[in-house]
Image (cartoon, rainbow, N blue to C red; front, side, top):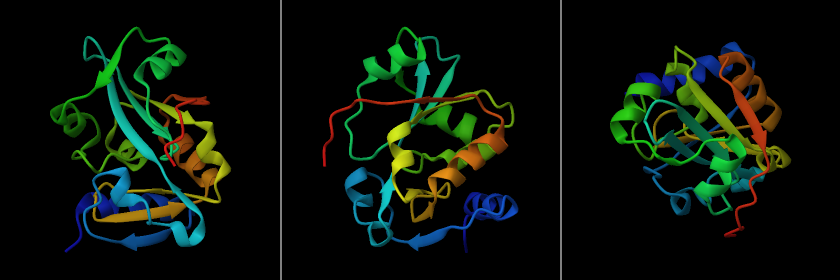
Length: 170
């Protein structure tokens, strides 16, 4: 039986008329696990990071090219936040109803307060498709970058587009 969050993610995309390609797979918790998912259609599996400020009062979902390494200082500076760190698993569950290893833009479906700021690496928009988990780590959905923007706009969260320079690890 499929997880309710997974079903809600697919229903939200369908309601927005966003086509997707679904990939079923073993739990993919790291970028290495995701490396081949969507490769057949030229998809980039995004690196999705859930961060918070020092006080734990502001939250940020970083969506970036999975081939890049993440540098906290760079993203902190571009967002104008003194110091970012990874949010706790409890904060992730409370804000986005997600478990570690399944962080995804689709988790914004559960941010009813629209309090999470999205930091989007513009390099992900260069791929024909981007892959993300549908709120669980045992599947991935590939959508077109313009549909990712459409989904983000539908949620009403603040979205900050930026070029993240992180060195490529591909």
